[in-house]
Image (tube, rainbow, N blue to C red; front, top):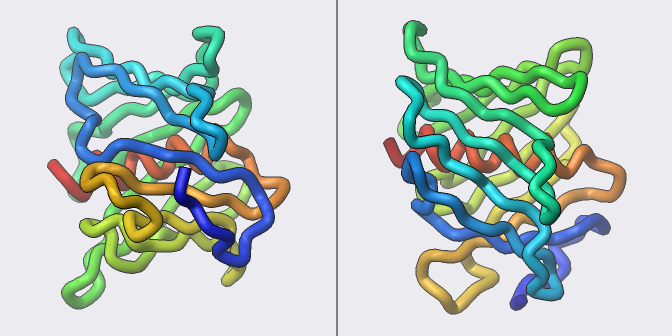
Length: 166
């Protein structure tokens, strides 16, 4: 797949850039090129809604835009975990805060628009996102640290991509 070890010891995934149009579905592949997750864009909703499913079609996370908020927000419902992703502008760079109910806070920061950023929890990198790992123009990779909630981290990546490219 073209991903190299970035100092994290968990799984790696390949995602397509700007494929998050409502009504569009796309696959997330693992490092072996296997289709392991599908992002299902729901076309008949008033707000952006995406469903992250496993390869068997089982819902793992529901991702929805929050329309009536001052700042851009999206919510993630993944099993018993609920998280809110919100955009914060710091200087000229985007910065995203993820509030996980009962689980603290994560931060996505770096060059978000160019898909070169990290996701951190308590100052520790839990995932890295990069386009530089691929020759294909509209592809980027996500590498996680071992033991992370894979559906939650991938759902955060979907939110960040959707919010940064609206």
